[in-house]
Image (tube, rainbow, N blue to C red; front, top):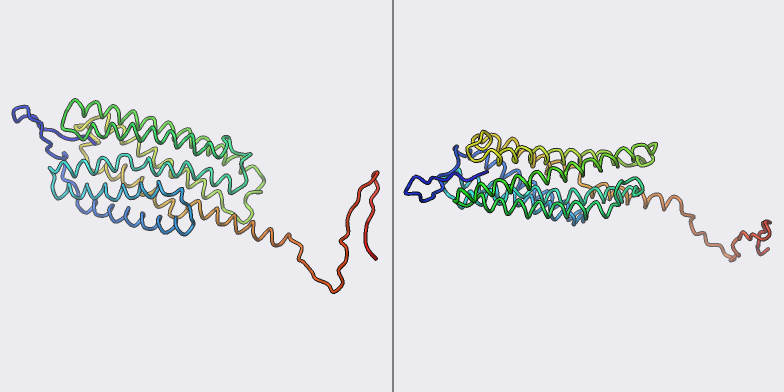
Length: 307
């Protein structure tokens, strides 16, 4: 989103608000929605001990306070601080969600003991894409900082920088989706070997669906910044909710249901059950006996025992 500036008063720049009246009810709805999502993910993170969800939690908090800034705008349409709060929090927030998504696939792969089926080593999944995420964040936050100034020249530069950051993030996500699809197909060919007691496909498909939501959001927001403050997207509030708030809230909901920590917990339970069923119980007897041993010597088998 780009600030709307009036320079008619002797050339002095003044922010005049958004080109529409901000919907109060919609703003409050998403404050409540993201706030509830934050609480749910905090509880799940502590319960499942999935500390790699901390960036995701930060993203949810940013969305919550970002839409508070939008509500503030609905009450004070020309309040530049409210606009800055909204734009600086909502635009880069999905980057934090993405960081956890990148780390989630490596956890899923390791939980399934399927590292050999991954096109990239699990540890590199996190490192490569989180590094790309950091670059996206730095570029977008720099561009956003420029767009929330009242300098028309700086706004135009900021728009370009933001678009570059969004395009780069889309490319990173497309690469990520491709690698996850490759893993999904390879794992699916294992004749159901990974299916025993697990529903791992749901978690991978949920990850892909969430990735698609963020790609869609970035595509529309990129078009918005490319068009500028007077563009069709920026001039209609429906796009701010339909292609900004809704896709990101969908991501929050998807991971509230398919939190990778649940799959990890299921795998641990199966492994514990398997180890217990396969183990030989220790039986005590009144007279200790020597165990039967297999001795291999010159290709012949002997049994050593005490009568």
